[in-house]
Each structure stands twice: as C-alpha cells, then as structure tokens.
Amino acid sequence: MKLGRNDPCLCGSGKKYKRCCLGTADGGAALSDAIVAPKADLSNAGSTTPPVLSKPPGVMSPDYWDQLEEQLPRKLRKENADIFKQIRAFTEFEAQKPEIEAAHEALEKYRKKFERLTRNTGKFLKRAEKVFAEAPFEAMRFSASDLQRAFESVGYPPFGAAGDLHFENMQKTIAFLVDDEQRKIRAQELMQLLPEYVAAGRHLDALIVEHSAMLMVEPSEEGIEITGPFLMCMFMHGMGEWEDQRDREQLKMFRKLGVDPEDIRRRGIEGVESLVQEMMTKKGASEELEQFLNAHPDLKALSEAQCRASEDAAIKLLQREDARHLLLTPEEMEPWLPAFEQRIGEHPEVLDSVNESGKPDEELQQRLFDIIYATCGEMAGEIFTKPRLDRLVDEVHAYRRKLRGKDSEGKTGAQGLLMAAQSSEPPSENHVLTLLCVHSFLKVIHDMHGDENDA
Image (cartoon, rainbow, N blue to C red; front, side, top):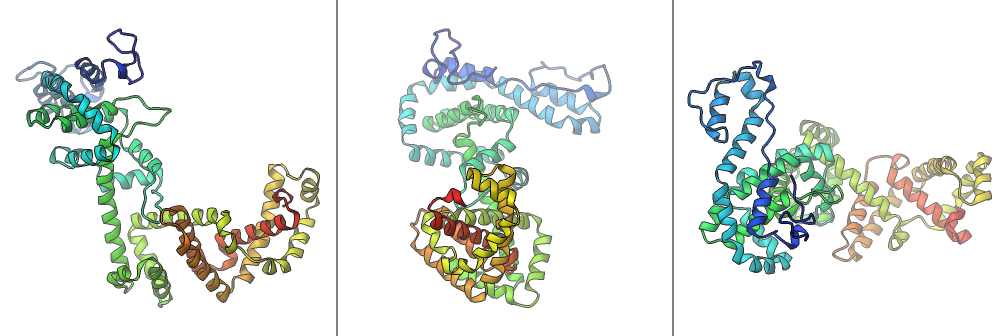
C-alpha cells in the first residue's frame, strides 16, 4: 500500500496521516509498509522444478537469492538480473528493519528542531545538498548518460540567458528516469542509512534522509510526482556532469575551427556573436562545423534544441510591447500594403468572412494567415538587405542592454532575434524575420483601424 500525507491515518484516529502519526514511530512503520517487495517473475526459468540449494537459508535471506541466482543458467541470470537485484535489496532492507525502526524512534526528540529548519527553505536545501554530496549517495546519483537518455525522450532543457534550468523540465526528466518501483527502491536505500547517521549523532541530517525517503513513496499530486531535495540533488549532480561533457565538446569544436577558447571568454556574449560571424566567413567553416556536429550527435541534438528554443523566444519577443520599436516602420510597410490587399482580394471567401464576422473560422483563419505569411516572406527577402540587417542587430543589442538583469526571457528572445538576423539563411526563408514582417503588418492594420481584430 501507499500511505499519503493526506490519507486517513492507520492508527484509526480519523485524522490525516500528516497531522497524526507522520514523524512518529507509527509513521516509520507505515513507511516500511509502503515499501513492498518486488514481484519476482521467474517464469522464464524453463523448469517447473526449483533448483536445490546447497544451503537452504530462509527465503527472506539475501543468501537464499544469491544461491538461487548462481544455480540458474548464465542466460537466465542475465535476463533476471534486475529482479534478483530488487529482491536482494528488499531482503537486506527487511533484515535491517529493527535497526531502522530504532533509529526512527531515536529521532523523535529532534523533530521540532527539524521542522524549524524546513521553514527556512534556503538553509534547508543548502544542508540537504551538503548531505547528499557525501559518499553513501554516490551510487544513487544520475549520470550524464542517464540525463542524455532522458533528454532524447522528453526534450532538451530550455535555458535562460543566465543558464537557468526550468523546474518543469527537471520534473519531466526525473519522472522519466525514476518510475514508481524505482522510487520505492531508492526510499528503502535511504532508510537503510538512518542507523549510520543516528549512530554518528547527525540527527538533523538523518531526518533529512528520512524526510526524502517519505517523499519518494508519497502519491503524486495531480499526476506530478513529488521531486524532493534528494532527487533534485541527484539530478543536479548529473546535470553538472552532463554540462561539463557538452562544454568539452564545444571547446573541441572551436579549436577545430581555429578559435581560441580564451578569446571566447574575453569577448563575452556580444563578442562571441561577432566571433561566430567571423568564424563562419572562413572558407569551409560551415562544412567543418557540420562534419563536427555529425560526429558528435549529442552536441548536434543539443544545438538544434537550443536553436528551436531561441527561435521560439524570439517570436515571443516580437509580441512584447517594449519590443515594438524592433518591428518595421510604417514607411517600410506602406509600399507593401497594396500587395496584401491584392493577395487577400484574390480569396473573396476569406475577405467576406472577415468583413461579416470580424473573425473567420479556424480553416479560413489559417488560409488568411498563409496569405499574409507568404507575402511577408517575399517582403523579408527584399527589405532585409545587409545594411537593414546590421541596423536590426544594433537595435537588438541596444534593447538587450536596457533589459533588467532578471529579465531572462527578454534576453533569451533578444539572443534568438540576433541569431536570426545574423543567420546565413536567406531572409525570404528565415522564419523569424518573416514573422517580424507579419507582426509589423498587424501593427500597421491595428494603428489604421484601432482594433487588432480588424486585421
């Protein structure tokens, strides 16, 4: 069974578990009940007769399962390795249960002090991070390969201008890596460490470990698994390792392209942008870059994900009120208004729908957008000459310098817009520049009619 904090307490008091036996000796017993034995499925053993053990110990002894595994054929040992691992872990946990419950009871008089610690979130998380950095937790940490496997499935993490990782993405990654069964296994591994921490007199640290174990077996809230300090620390360790690998790959890439990494550090963000442009003008640089990325698929996938995230952020930036000055001017738009009128006029059913209701149905709305988008693609190809792109780059740099330090969304959007403006892709095929024209057109229509729906 799983006993949640909001479930009726097993003692029969009628109170919620979190208001009753949670944090008492009974609460510890309930946690033990929540950690159930794994279901062993040895149906592939190929025989209905169980092997005869040379020393048949009790079934709850780890030795029993060690001997059973040794007597299976090699192929079956390999196929059932995970099952035996889980069973051994459970039997070890059961054997240590009296010590765990004694440690749990010994912590009772320190719980109020622990509650005071948890009220100071920053202090609590800092102490938890220090505890989970210790040797007993090394084998439980996520590795860089674990995170890479997860990112390939749930998507690469979007980073802000300051490298901030979105909490939602971290939750998705952890949920992919740790299912319900694995959460129970991790919980029992944490509980097995309690006696050691109590014996060392580290009572608050022991309560951090126990608290994390309880969160591991707590039911999810609205389909979202509770993360808790333990899983966060395990994730951040893997994340640091994963980032180090990506950094090393990027340094290799820059060296291959003849760029000094120290030059990158000296230039800063804006300097790196000009450095990349200089680098890409070198003969064969694009081909070398493509070859390098093809040889490093992890880095290539990350680069593509970051480009998509930057493009999305740039598009969101175009809708911000404080970024409207980055759109085309009415003077630049004016020569193109007859073209829009002609193109839309060629589709009277769309125009009639707009005139009648002010808002077409979804199909006609999509057709209207397609007409506007196609015209804006042509416009981008003619308006965004090299001097006009240079002007846009200067305007975006000026805009970014005025942003407040914590406006990571605005800075990321500005970075994406700079990437679009400095791209080698023809402006007529550049999605961000085309949408800049679209928003410029809608702004002109809004200013002419005073109502954006008239667009």
